[in-house]
Amino acid sequence: MLRSILRSVAGSQPQSNLGKILLPGTAEPAQLTASRSFSAKKNSKPDKPQQANKNVVKKKGKKDGSEDNKNVKADDMQLSPSHDPNSGIRAERLARLAQNAGNKSLDVRPDGRPLFTATPSISKLSRRDVCHYMDFSEEELRRVLPEGLPLGMEKEFEDSMRPALLVRQSFLDLRDNFGRIVDPPMHTTSKIPQTRRKIVLDGPRSCGKSIALAMLVHWARNEGWLVFYVPRGREWTHGGFFYKNPQTGLWDTPVQAANILQDFVKYNKKILEELRCNITEPVPLGEGAGVGWMRGVDTMPVPEGSTLYDLAESGIKHTHASVGALARLREELLLVDKYPVLFAIDQYNSWFTFSEYEEPVTVRSCRPIHARELTTVNAFRSMMHKDMMMVGAFSHSTAVGKLRQELPNVPPDSRVNLPRYSLDEAATVCHYYARQQLANQDAFSEDNWKKIYYLANGNGTEMRQLMPLMR
Image (cartoon, one colour):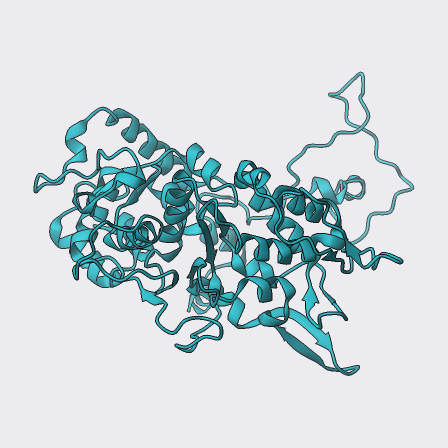
């Protein structure tokens, strides 16, 4: 459509005016220019024009100075930086937020309910805090979650310009479920729901699965738990080297294994240094990343008195032991009884489909390798251990597709569907975005935010994107 309009305009106007039509206010058509200016050798008389070399023959169609352009390097040619209109809007928002920082009247909804809760920690949140926002310290979040924040959480903080999250009843149910497992109530009643040790968080796109899982990890670590947190499970099946281990028949990914161990010890180092290894059998070695097999050595011994931190460090330092140390760490964590152990896996559905790796079958064909054939995924995917606590969150942004209801090595009653925003939650969310200057204050009204809610069908990401378009 746009091309046809441009062709019709170009055909009806003279050729010399085409640049003015496409770019109003410019006398010449747009062209690529060098961002740097170049000059010839310094001359004591800059005003005197230089004499042209008579031996130089100008080619047809070449402008003056074409010889100088030959000396311009490719790195010096780049597009001139264009003005970003969003930078001015963002600066205005920051100025308004700074001006209204001390105005507490903006933190109250029109119906008199506060937007923010005064509860200081996640552990003390109750039903009275539902549909209220809770302020966090982004620095503290990155300290407790050094593996990385979910993409949806980072985008929420960026667009709202404030590290705050909505307290939802679905998260409180998830937190209380695992709290009752570790600390059972003195008296059980029929009103208390049955606890689940294995949960798979499912639900429509942008319903808050990843954020709920990250908040659960935050709460568990504040309670002193040992948490194995994987914020990007898809990375276990993509990228890096992969080799087939002839001893196990599975595929080893040493690069991913070393990265997983590094992320795990970032927060859990102190706890891992206290825990002794219960399994003294040697750790099997595999093929290193880009260096092949070790000659004459197939296993790595586990010295007496070694800790889980020593086991993880051996996998980080020695690429041949990365996969074996990670698989052994899974077995060791299942035997820990001094601390509650929780496995929290985001993008869990990526472990039930094909990876990006392929095995050559013939000269012209390859066989896609399933995620279950990877040693790391095969060690951590199962939920069938009796006493383990594990939460896996599906992510529909990974383009995995719809999986069947019953998954292998997953209890059939473990799936929990998280809902999108309810009307009451949407009211708090929209008023919070209006308080953060994300919406036009003159156009913000109850009818308009309800239109956005029904248009987005409770999708939090779409509601946040539609708020600036309110008119």
